[in-house]
Image (tube, rainbow, N blue to C red; front, side, top):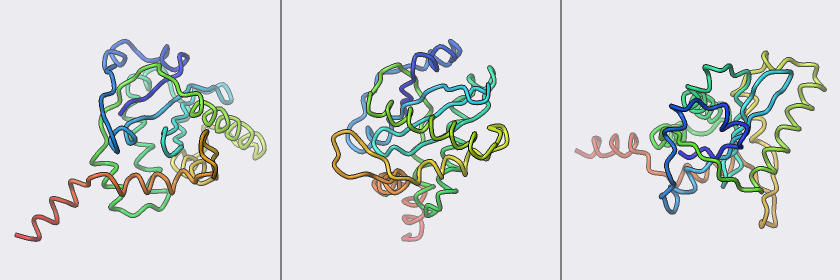
Length: 190
């Protein structure tokens, strides 16, 4: 999976994590599945990462990261991603498809201005939402918060109609192979 980082986030990544940088070569559904953008923002003086899936605009919010957390960003990303899918009430077979097709993160600084625009909107929504509710960023549940951020209409440059990120992610996951379900089905046949 490719995490296209802003320069601010990329600068926070340790050198050993940056060493995993690889060019993207996937095509088709796999290419849609693999591409994410991420940004580092400060909310209430805490370092937080917002990740937005390029094709679906599915949003992950990873709050309150410390310096050592950036070394394990892949683990944090995977944890928030899978648990956000669960909180979004997606069927178990789609969550299994996401977990099965998850690949370790690679990082680069390639940007898509449309996705960056979505990330900017999301960061403003988070900042305003926490301020309006007088809530602490350290006290929120990142899975529920990410699910709520992904359940809203979102405009995408070049598309006439708004999309719902959680629904778009569900449709994308339906197209991915689910090797766990496929192997269980083949075992039942024999």
